[in-house]
Image (spheres, rainbow, N blue to C red):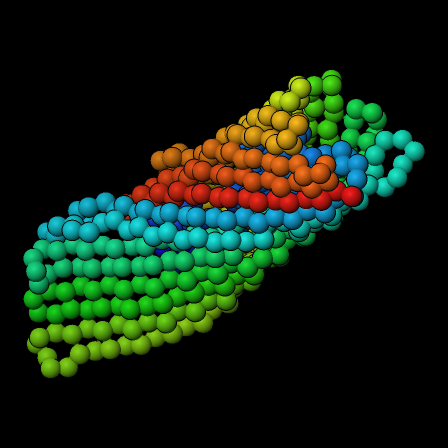
Length: 444
């Protein structure tokens, strides 16, 4: 029910395996739905790319090509400095199945909580090198590529009568993200063919906190649990990207990109503090137990290859873009000795996905204004029975060209997804997101 990390789940499964027991369905649910936070969690960068349906494999025209397809950097003809911000509004609604306890009536089963966050989205510099023929461009950038911001609130009450009831409440907040420190280069191999490569160093922090309270009351006794917990995870990773673009005609450009497996090390510090109280009318005393525990976990993992294809069509003032990206998340694995028991479950339950994005842009040359719209599907890597509504988003935006040297782009992303917990307490979590991107660039 609460968000846990794979390292914590690994400890549970490892403990069960050590006694020759099988993991229950509830633990498999935790592994599938509360997956490693860095998996299948690309946040998207650059207002123009996001407004065009999170496309960029063949359509990037600025420093964001370092992430989408480094070969597109070869189009940059003047020194470019760019930066941007992103703003997220997240709305969570959680609905739990009624009839949880025999003899009790479910009175409260829905929780709702919102959060907003604003972050630095990108900083980049691209430097074209003077060449006798063709193009050679070097670039450096810092990009927020994964977002961990999430919230949830649980409110449950089941009662047989006024004196016999069970109450639970929980609030979860998660913040943080991953930044990619990127160095890239691209060159024109021929008048129509460009190639590029990028090296990414990932750093970031994930902060999770939860406050939990429960009370089980009857005519003769009651018990309560009041607990707070926190997990702080530091991420460090590395990967590479190789890309190509080919201009088949003056109107059509196709692109291809390969993202190598990324290798990660994660260090987690956790803390749990709580108080349990038990009281009964049969005694004038009550029992109170306070507890606290610190934990530390370190683990390694490898993300799989990703392959992308893109197409960009330009005719007069109309630009169209289409991206397809394939990733087989069943090949995600933990590479440390402690977490090996999870890999077989991952291979069986995670799946391959194809993310699809499409966008259109119309340019008004005289005022220097561009209007954009698009949509994209970013599938979750879980079995279909866990997904009520997959991640799907609609996008729109506008761009301004000022004095032919400065660009200001604004993009908006609207959508969300809904997932189901099957065990031990069936529930549905709906997430609605509204993201705003602002990117500014200057070319000298």
